[in-house]
Image 1 (cartoon, rainbow, N blue to C red):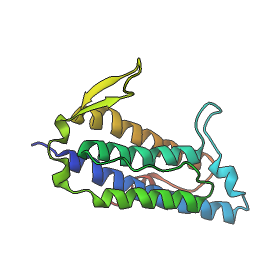
Image 2: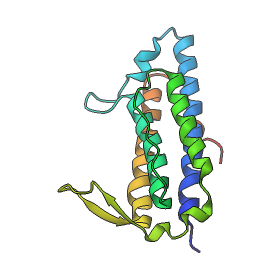
Image 3: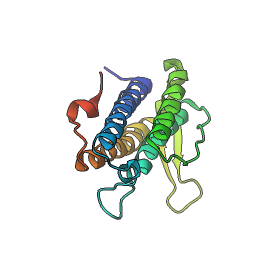
Image 4: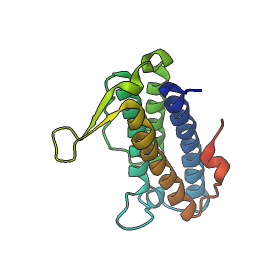
Length: 169
């Protein structure tokens, strides 16, 4: 049995982005209930050399939109990284989900064979097939940033668990 690049990407990205929206809503409610300044959670990080929560969410959204766009030959939507509130992050995730909703399975046909070039024109340039790009680069990167966002919030006392991370499937 083979699995299409559409099936391996869009539903996975949507499931976890929707779950991340719910986790962020719980984090905002937690901040209100515990009288915590929202910026404290938005700027929280697991270790000083890691990105803060806001950046983790931004990057997760970026991978969801850029991986799917590249696999379909669509233009990668450009977002500014100006989010400063939970509402701003929710809006970014909404934009990303709306973009994913515009993509069809037919647009992904042949995507596994596309040549994807990472860091073009630099010493770190790497060429990957669409299948390798999705399964060994794009999805792991996306999952890392979604997981780290979840971990930051859990570490800061937000009452979330595995079901919250997974969302509806």
